[in-house]
Image (spheres, rainbow, N blue to C red):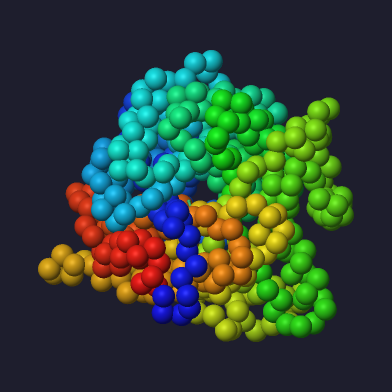
Length: 489
Ligand code: BGP
């Protein structure tokens, strides 16, 4: 440890993370149905610094267009990077790095292609059981995200997505099928990936299809309420079937800091941070926080809560908290008075002049990860998993086939040093899964050029290439970090 004593516990879960819709491919294989992400359309003609901002709604016309083989937006663009076919080779590479854990998602549409079927699709169950068995062969602990923007498209087009309370039952059918098939093999489960993304991505999070939705804020928080109830009932079912399992919640967390010491900026920052913590408050504490009423008043939202919902939330909070961390952002109550550009939509923040940015405008703040870990642990006093952290960057394959990514090593090293500081602060952080441990299709841009992996995949933005796997320099760097349990950081 170059900065201080090593505080990583001997059983720290070092690993990597992916999502089915971004890594698997095989969109038409094994009876799989279409998911929301399969037909997500990305308009790359927009200015690059605004690419993340467009990850929002879709119209019915766009959804149809994405299913038309003659359309430029035809969905197989979402080819993933071939994990469906290469999973044994990929898991062997993860094992070579010494992974203790691997966070992956289950494509709901491999199990229930349309979402409302009575019985699960055996081919889908068999595929995931084979993947889990391969991980266990190398003593790699699976962490399963049950819903990672992969809801069946049919549930959106026929039922209106999560705004329809019926989807709770469809989700419970799905998670119960997974628990029953994988019990005894999977200990860690996450109910929803980035559940707070409903705020900015009502399409991929909730299956809300329609621009100019009559009252979009109302739909977002009604859908979120149904997801809260579904998450609590899934936690109940998981504990019934697998008494030793651990169920977690997960948010996309950007540390937000006041742009100035002005009291308005400080209050605005507290309110802005609550926009994300609200979701973990409900799932980790088991009740709607006191500020809900005023927050809903400000949004002109009044959700419908059925009899028994409140008791379900209170009885079945999650066992651990997890989050994705990429960036931080500064919050100003009066942005119109500032020269600096507004940051990306995810934080609605202002560019922090003290921080550098990635090629996609994400503000790089390793110390912010230590602060976020302390904030979350102070608030929930539950074990914490860093479920995503990584640097999206353009990687170059040299003439000799080598791939030098010192920028990625620097980013990860600096963030892991701060995880060590948080451990020294007494935070119970039990694992770290580097995002995109193998190159995947970027979620917000549907592009390959924004690469995260320790392993390079030969594939371009159009999905062309051999899908050959190659080790980047960061592969051996991370292998050494894991082998020394963090000593080489
Ligand atoms: C998170 C998602 C991941 C991943 C990550 C990086 O929000 O949980 O799926 O995509 O963002 O984002 P991007 O791929 O757009 O760079």
